[in-house]
Amino acid sequence: MNLAANRLRAWTLAAVLAVSLTAAASAFLLPVTALDRAILDARFAFARKPAPPRLDAPAEVAVIGIDLHSARAIEEPMALWHARLGRLLEGMRAVKPAAVALDIVLPDRSYEGVVPGLDAALVRGLVMSRAAFPTILAQTVDEGGRHRTIHPAFVSAAGAGPGYALWDVDPDGVVRRFDERLGER
Image (cartoon, rainbow, N blue to C red; front, top):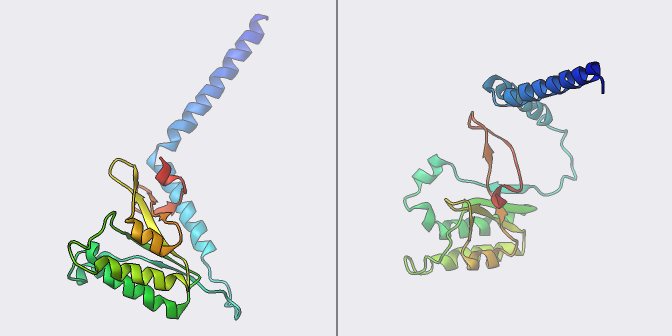
């Protein structure tokens, strides 16, 4: 190779490297990611514009989550809400949703020793609702990132397999993306 070809190759390599490093560095800068989030929010807002109502609309999916205000209004801790959740699921049969996703992490073991009949109340609600709609229980991971089990009686009573309830939160505290592999990391 001649000297000119070597110089051209070196300059081309340097330019590609400089562009690559600049692009990689800009991905970590807050203004770029803030702009990305703003653009994504605008796209979501546009996509959320309501469609005209349909008379033949299918049943809706119900996602049940509890906010902090509601949780504080109930005297017992969330870990003991079995009977409340069972009654909620039984009541959902009248609404006839296509599916219910219960976005509350259920215990990994029985609480029958703490309050007799507690597990049975939730199992009854899960079994009774199962004939009307599938109920998907929230699956998550423990502090070490390992699969966290749900008490087997609840999973069996629900009938449908649990689904991961893990969300990738952006630095500004908003969830904009979902990765179905979050629980597998």
